[in-house]
Length: 334
Image 1 (cartoon, rainbow, N blue to C red):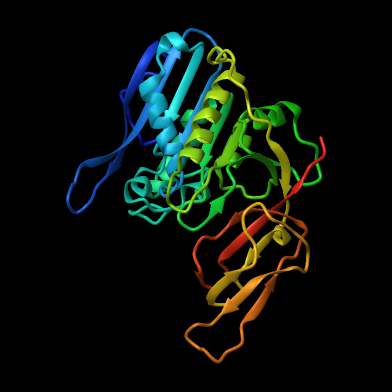
Image 2: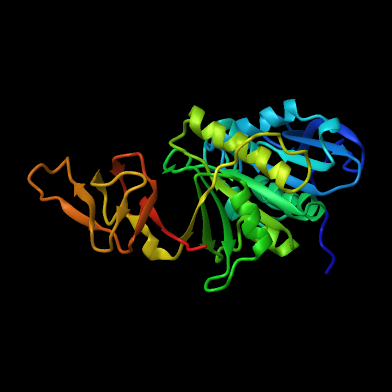
């Protein structure tokens, strides 16, 4: 069966030299615009032969660090600075990004659970299909910039997926460490609906990030994001290295299965006994589930199931059963 072409259109010419900043046009017929389209910002900076790298942000709309970093890069980077081709999609799930939500305000689609997408599907599925079937095949690597969004707070991290029990590809690992985040972690490859799974299907490298979160940005997380983008440009040979700049050495870690994650066992108000960066032990009490609407009800302890370091935590006190409260990582010997 022949793959169906994308329904997204654009005036961008991916073979043209120079700098192009325009919009992908996603057809969307609504009650207020019968023959309308949604404009998704896209940019390309191309100068001669060389590698192609795709930079994405706004996969989840409430994750702002990458969106800001890539918007700055679009304004700053010029063809004379580049050897090869840089493609930038700074607000990948545009409806989600404009609403400031994790998922689309139109179809509630989670772009990072929508690959490989569908050219005849929902808005989010059409975006996913375009990214995997049009943009990724042109690239040697994709950098997909995430953060914790409104509901999580991370130590700024870069990440890559790998097969459970297998050794990481040396080139992939080198790119992960080159990003220069405080933490660089490997996670088990198991989810087939993400951008990293899409990259794997296309035979290209994928580096992700988790840069802060809480629905905010800080000077620290933006600095990690912007320096990380510059490091990726340099690592893949797209730009000349900045002379005299000292690059951060990342702490290499691993995130395994379900036991690395701490979830709320019931609805309530979580009182934490830990903070980001704390080393914890399996069986250690992480905090207490309080029931503020039932003052006489005893709190319920919640314990970690794994030794490790807290690299992510939920910033909100009120939780529902199944909410992720935290997750751990363990150190990897180099």
